[in-house]
Amino acid sequence: GGAPAGGGGGCTFGGAPSSAGSGGFQFGGAPASSGGGFTFGGGAPAAANGGGGFVFGGGAAAPAAAPAAAATATAAAAPAAAAASAGASSSGGGGRPKLEQQQVIRAIEALCTHVARVGAAGDDGEGGGSLLSGDTPINLVVATKRMPKACRGAKGVKPKLLPLPHAWRSLDETEVCLIVKDPQRAVKDACAAEGVTAKVIGIDKLRKKYVPYEAKRQLRAGYDFFAADEAVTPLLPKLLGNGFYKSNKLPLPMRLGRKEGLRDALQRAVGGAIVRPTFGTCSTVTVAATSMSPAAAAENVLAAVDAVAALLPGKWGNVQALHLRCPNSVALPIYNSLPMQ
Figure 1: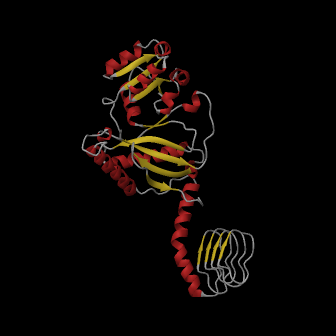
Figure 2 (figure 1 turned 60 degrees about the horizontal axis):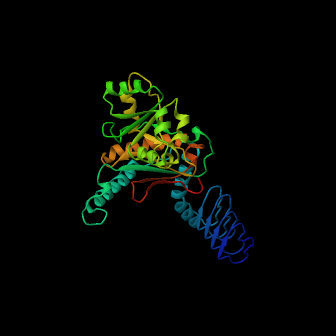
Figure 3 (figure 1 turned 180 degrees about the vertical axis):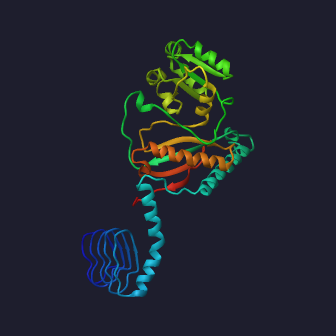
């Protein structure tokens, strides 16, 4: 509270001075004179006539009359203060804090072990197999400190492609659907010429055939990856409905009218990380798969972390936490921002 504790102090929490006597435990911005025990917080001087215990935080001066006690406090606080200042300088200034690649690899190995055990045991625990027994995606979960600004229209739901060092899935093993402007024959011929197996739908056909909810649901469930020509992207949110947004299958805008390089462009898109706008403080990006080596998956995670942070307002200063998870698994933390950051 706000009352001074003069003469004996016990525990002080908040902005009250603890003067004359002892001062046991103190949390906040209040000065602790003549004693001190434990002081946590920034900007609070701990003027000690009889020793200073432990002081944690920035801006706190602890002039001590007892050299042994002051030395003990300094030695105890140095590692934590150094770590806190290093994290604050790296994230607050926009640079990425040091993420240990070995820690990321251990998290990926733990997820792969979990997927293998669930696949071997089956959903009923009797060895019947599982949906997770195949090539399971590994997702990066990014939690931010501030809510994103609301953006209406097609721009507010427009996905963005982030390149990855290693493709986490192959174009030949992915069911692809392309939504293009009419006439669609040019894109079909380009797919046939480059050996791309994909469903090509013109915008007029999308308007006429996929009006009922069941037709949209079957279209959404029938393909793993959707891409659309940039010219028709603004029309898609209304034509496809909320189901595509909720299932993270809203088509990725691409230049599909090109005559050459279509296969390479689709391979980069299918194997890359797709960031879709969110209206909350948490977003999920698929960056790897359990079939990849842990080292390659870790490289994808670190590359995606840098790319996602660069898109956020405030950069790394807006990142609260990072986790890795698979479908139906727990989220394993790989980074957490301290409250003082």
